Image (tube, rainbow, N blue to C red):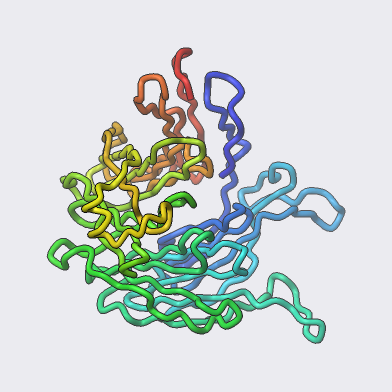
Length: 382
C-alpha cells in the first residue's frame, strides 16, 4: 500500500492507492516483509512456502495495462506480481526478513527452532533464465536455538552483515557473515539470556537504525521492553535500559529511524490493544559507568553515551490486540494493525507532544480496502 504525500491539513490516502491481490498461500500468512527499496515483498505462511513479489509494470499483449487480480487496472500500470516461490522449511514459516541490497539479495526465514538464510541466484552467460524462475538457494542453516525462534532481523548496513534472532528460550543470538564472498559461513558471534523462560522468552526485536549510535537493539517479552548495547571493549552485549512493565505481552516493537531529531522514538504494542511510544534522549555516562561498560572514550563505538527514557505516550487504539507496529522511512508516521482488520496511521504534534490518528484503512469482509481520512487541527505541527 502506497502512501501519497500530504498537501493539505488532511492526510492524503486514496482508494486508488490500494491494491488487493491473492497471496496464493494455502494457509495463514504469518509475516510480510519489504526490501530496503519497497519494490520487492516476501510473504511466509503456514503452508511452509515463501513467496517473492515484485512491484513491476504490467502490460498485456496489446501494450495496455493489464487488470490486477482484483479486477481493476493497476495505478500507473504498476502491480504486485509473483516472482518466485519456494518451500523454505518443513514446518510453518513464521518470520521473514530482507538484508540490505548492498550485501546482495538475501532473506532469512525461521520455523520452529531453525533459521535459514537464502540467496537469490544470479544468471550466468552459460545459463540464462527468466526472472520468474530465478532460483533461491539456502546458504546457511542455523540451529543453535533450543526453542522456537520468534523474531529475526538483519542489523543496519553500517555494522556489516549481521543477523539477530530471538527465541522462546529467552536467548538473543547474533550471527555474522565475516567473509562476504562465502555466505555459507555464519558463525555465532554473541549470545546472551535477555529474558527468563518464565517470562515467556523473547517475543520481538528491533534494531536501532541510527548510524550515530553503537549497535543497540530493543527486545520485547511477555512483561517488558529492554534495550541492549554492544561494547567493543568487553565484546559483549549489556543491558542498557529496561522500560516499565507491560500489563500484557509485548507483541511487536519498532525503533523509529532518526532523521534530524535529537531523540529516539520506540513503539511497542501489546496483547490487549495498548500502543506505547517511548521517547529517549541521549545522555552522558558517568566515569564509573563508562569504566564498568568497558568504554575507552571512543564516542559512538564503545557506548560512552546513554539513552534515558524521557516520556511514555499510551495511544488510544481500537479494541482488541494490536499485533504489529511499523515506522515509515523518515520515522514520522507510525502504522499499526490489529484485530478488526484496520490499519491506523499516527503522527506526533511537535508543538504539544501528543499523538493523533490521522488516517485509517479498513478492510471489509469482501476484501475491499476503504480509507477514512481524519481531520487534523489547523494548529497541528507535523
